[in-house]
Amino acid sequence: MKTLVIGANGQIGRQFCELAHEADVPIRAMIRDTSQQAWFQERGIETVLADLEGDFRKAFYGCDQVVFAAGSGPHTGPDKTLMIDLYGALSAIDLAASLGIGRFLMVSAMRADQVLEAPAKLRPYMAAKHAADAHLRASRVPYVILKPGRLTDEAATQRVTTDVANADDNRISRANVAHALLEVVRNRELRQREFSLLDGNTAIDEALR
Ligand SMILES: NC(=O)c1ccc[n+]([C@@H]2O[C@H](COP(=O)([O-])OP(=O)(O)OC[C@H]3O[C@@H](n4cnc5c(N)ncnc54)[C@H](OP(=O)(O)O)[C@@H]3O)[C@@H](O)[C@H]2O)c1
Image (cartoon, rainbow, N blue to C red; front, side, top):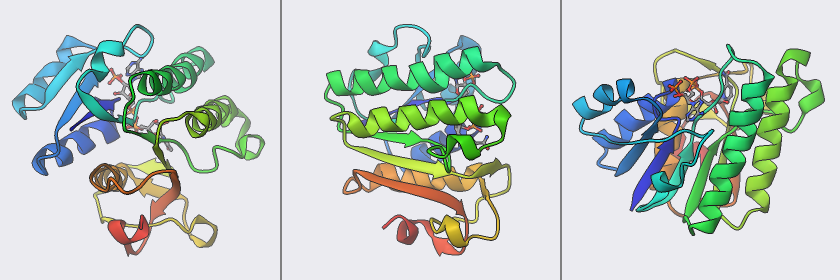
């Protein structure tokens, strides 16, 4: 029972891979460049070389779950938003459906469904995340969608809130998102669930119950 991690070399991805590996959760890290392999090999983490903009079907073989933590990032244009955050995510969901993958765990974004309320610069990204989430909901793949707020590089507190309407702040550390992903990966009962996620005061397993 292996989990394919798409976006494994990212800031959330690496932290999640380390946590999962330490917890003896079998994973396969999907990375797109051989220069990224050493970091994973040093830790004994399996890798597969594949690109969301190419044919990445082979990456799924032998996996029964997928974590999608990839993203085009803030330093690229709308072309990459379209190709990675939208098309890459849709392709991953379609592959998961066609291969009978057991669960798809999506890292989305808080308020991705409120596209027009986002700052103009962020709207294409929010629209891509919104469409990817909708595609996942409409697919036949069991899913969990995590919707973190603005990401920070703070250390993990392992305490979060899903009650974003009453939260004082709109941020969450990437480290806490990685811990939340680990909780979801391990808790196989969770499916057809969506959680907005911010730093907070509740233990992660309790918040995601
Ligand atoms: N920034 C925010 O405030 C915010 C808020 C809510 C949600 N999110 C979401 O959080 C997730 C991850 O955040 P992060 O900070 O960990 O991002 P990150 O460090 O930029 O990591 C993104 C990863 O996606 C990979 N990627 C990009 N294009 C790819 C492609 N064509 N094929 C395969 N992989 C590709 C990158 O690969 P390389 O390492 O090879 O470049 C990188 O490893 C994203 O889904 C993002 O949309 C972000």
